[in-house]
Length: 232
Image (cartoon, rainbow, N blue to C red; front, side):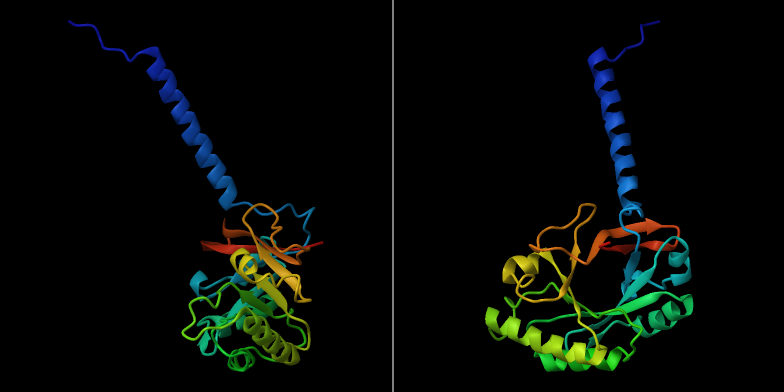
């Protein structure tokens, strides 16, 4: 009977190291997708939801520590989140604070976008400040829109939406939009920034809200949600 063939020691060592790396990577990935900032550092935390998140149980999220919820409501001049009305009813029933988000389209006139928002979002003093998501640039608009026009139209939109809400809006501004227009310091509004795991610093001044995990997995939902914290 022939002798059993054995792998050289160096191959066994490499295999062990590879296995350890895979296990370590899997553990780090698991930790990240379940990670939220420490409650001691950020006492007030919440979620951002839309139709894409499915049927959200706000009661379940409240149970795991969500103090508030922002609901995506409108987009541009005509688009509306299909789940907004349902989410609005559910978040009220859960007894959570809540606010609405409008996705701003720099290619569309401000008054048409404001009309869309005020039609969808009720006038209610108990709502959190409206959040205006600034992510798209005007570079691909059918008709050219100057940087000055982007800022001017945005101010018109803000004035109309804030008149409806009765309070200043939040600028939910992406790093790409800020890099393109540099409006975070030009507009005197509180900021909502996004960066997974690490505090964002791309706006050049302090933020008020931070999307700290854009794909949080938890027992409260079968799909990932965006986890948001408030600057203490």
